[in-house]
Amino acid sequence: MHRMTTPAPQLQRHGSLRTQAQAAYARLRGSALLRPSLFKRLLGVQLLVFAGLLAVLLSLTVMLLLARGNGSLDTDLKLLAQALARTSSLNPTPEIITAAAGHITALHLETADIPISPDELGWQVWNKDGRLLARSPNGDSLPDFPPGSLSTSERSQSPGWIMLAAWDPAHQLYAVFAQSSKVTTRLLDRTLKGMLPPTLVIVATVCAALWLAMRLGLKPLAQLARQLSERAPQEATDLAHAPPHVELAPMVHALNTLLARVRSLRAAEHGFFADAAHELRTPLAAINAQAHALTIASSAAQRSAALQSLHGGVERAANVLDKLLTLARLDHTVTLGNHAPTLHMTDLAALLRDTLARHASRTALSQHELGLDAPTELWAPADAPALAAALDNLVDNALRYTPPGSQVCVRLTAEPQHALVSVEDSGPGIAPQDHARVFQRFERGPHSDGISGCGLGLAIVERVAAAHHGSITLDSSPALGGARFCIRLPLNHGHLAR
Image 1: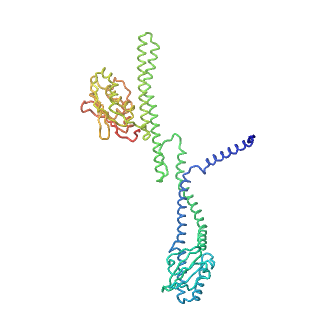
Image 2: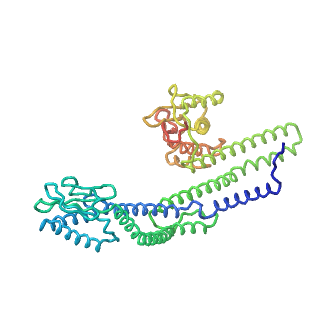
Image 3: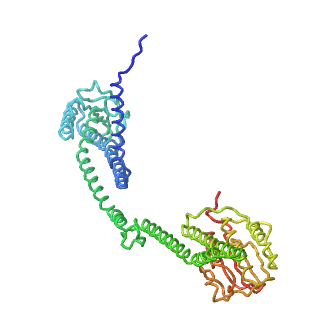
């Protein structure tokens, strides 16, 4: 038993051909002909519409030619049949009828749009009693159609023939005029062929006009692309000289919105680095001094004191850096707008209970009276970690800037469209002229002397509220007399995760 094998050179040749074919296909796909193009898309749609209109025009032409009753074919046959009936009624003898039919047939052959053979025409003349008076010489190929057998308003068909009948004015003679179906086929073929050259000229003209119109119409888009490509990488200003066309307005608006976000992100980055450099300079200088004191300490007590001071400086620097990073992340979230992270349904009452539990040991030492007035549960869409950080900052501020033994009350209530979280205290409060200032970065209240802090807590709270599409307000507490901070959060939001 012999096994057939393909020679190695032949296998290599097949592999080479396949590789060449794949490379050619890849080049074809990468060519401008097959790449997606707005120009080709618009041009194709317009040509498709034009082709549809052209098809409708051709269909209407054929319908006008072949329409029953009022088409040009029926009209010609009706006129011939009426002429034969009228002339035959003047002297209804076979000889006169035959002579009249000969003249009518000859006139039709001379005036026809296409060559017609006399054998392709036939006629019959009957009296009203159904007696055949005369017929065409080729009468053997045309069946008899006595009075009443054919319509006088539209053509009838018989194998190989189409015909139409007519009565004379006195309704005494009945004439039938017939034409071969071959004539109709040739007439339709000639009509379509006659329309072909002007149709091709129209198609070529319309294609050229559409191509030119599309080139000119898309020129503003090319100008916009060139304006964007000529901009410097660091330039993020709005497009000042964009094309004024209405169709490009949404694109220009979207680009300017994107550029505004880029500017905001750059400003946030610059602000973060500036804030970090500003706020970390003092803690780092203190750490450096304390590290130097530690190296030159001569006793265990001095080393312990220096080490404790160094530890405190590191904690303060870490606290500042943590708040700066939190603020930078919130700036990024708010700037992104619709691309902000999705929110999850969160029990705000449970979140507040957890927040107050974290401060329980601290209130025990400072003898603050920390209370919570909240329902068992209240659900709202929220970023739980960010909102917990904001609430923690509000409670921390209330405990930090009020004297020992003061009252701090946290309330949670439900409004028709919002959840309201308020933190109020019995401390000295904040003057109305300072309400806006305390939300600025690195700004601290008038009663902050001798109290540690970096002035970022309320800025973080404001950013968290903005990221939740909510708001924060500051006023005086009617019940306790100190400051009252109120956060309103929407109960429903489109970015809710499912």
